Image (cartoon, rainbow, N blue to C red; front, side):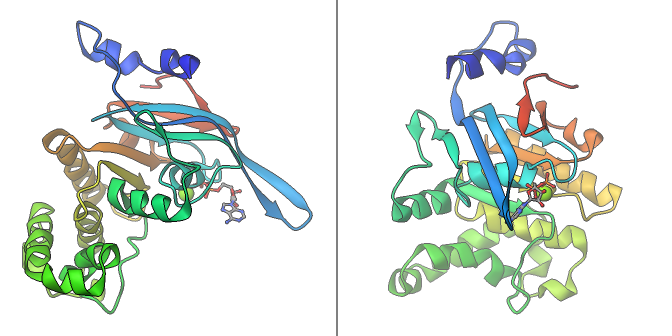
Length: 255
Ligand code: ADP
Ligand code: MG
């Protein structure tokens, strides 16, 4: 663990005159993951070490197929590593009982994907409410429904979509779909936002707007953000960029 910590704090040291103490938020230590293709095991992650500070906006770049999505899924407990550990603060989280893991995933992480993954039959408000429905029993949800609706509207307004509450995904532009997906990721008030190519399906200008929105959330809400992209100029908007190559993170800050 010490090696990882000493390999990564360049950002902390270059952005402040006085080095700030590390405040580790999420980390992977020696994470490996392979997929089975027929007879063969295809290694994707081969000992990934990465440490992200609380409030940091980190981008992870790498070629298509380099394992960026796999890494984000493993960090966010959507998938398990074959070897290695995931830590949230000082706690190991990859080996928790399934129920605890599910609850932690739901409460700690917000996910944003390239293709939005909104439910087509629900409108914007209903899509944003969905994580709260999943989190609670039907009875608790029903009791809290007014507060939840207010909270959902708050985040929909925050992403600039207040005028689209009752629109369905088919009635929205790409940028609006991603804004709705970001509101859905925020409604559970996560600590960490994991964004997988969030601008990958958008034209350049709309992509920049989404990026500005993420950067604004990082600074105003102190949200820790890990963003995966294959685009260096998009990655450069983050505080720090690392590259995934040959199943490992290059320690180097590539800006
Ligand atoms: P990236 O996001 O960098 O494009 P991925 O993490 O999606 O890369 O995939 C890395 C490699 O793992 C690719 O070769 C891909 O085909 C393979 N892979 C990803 N998910 C699966 C899966 N569920 N089953 C088998 N192979 C997979
Ligand atoms: Mg991917």
